Structure formats: C-alpha cells, structure tokens
Image: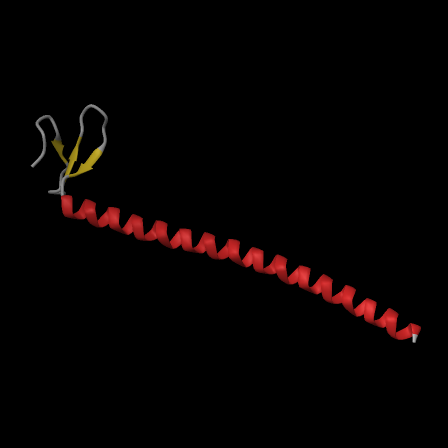
Length: 84
C-alpha cells in the first residue's frame, strides 16, 4: 500500500506520514483523482468568472463611448437647430 519507512496515521487507513518531510500522504488513488477533478472544475469556474468580468468591463467601456457620442450628436443637433 505504501513504501517502506512510511508511518501509518492513526485512525486513517489511507493516510501515511513521510518521516523525512513530515508530510501526510493520501494513498487512496481514487480520492486523489477526485480531488484533482474538483480542482480542475474549480479552476474552469474561476476562469469563466474572470472572462465574464473582463467582458463586462469592455461592455461598460463601450456603453460609455456610445453615451459620449450621443451627447456630442445631441449637442450638434441642438446647435444646428438653434441656427435655423
């Protein structure tokens, strides 16, 4: 189950301690694979959030530009209308 020299963690059949580093190691491969998959899913979710936030920032910037152009256009029309 684990290499020689590893110390079983009391009360946990799938955990051993590396006496050299003190690290606790999970020897259950399926639990590790499940953990890796959960991390991958969480990383994808965070990436989607970051992408959405960046897209939202861009949309807000474009809306501001459109508002500025509309104000300029309105001012031009008003100036033209008063000249008539």
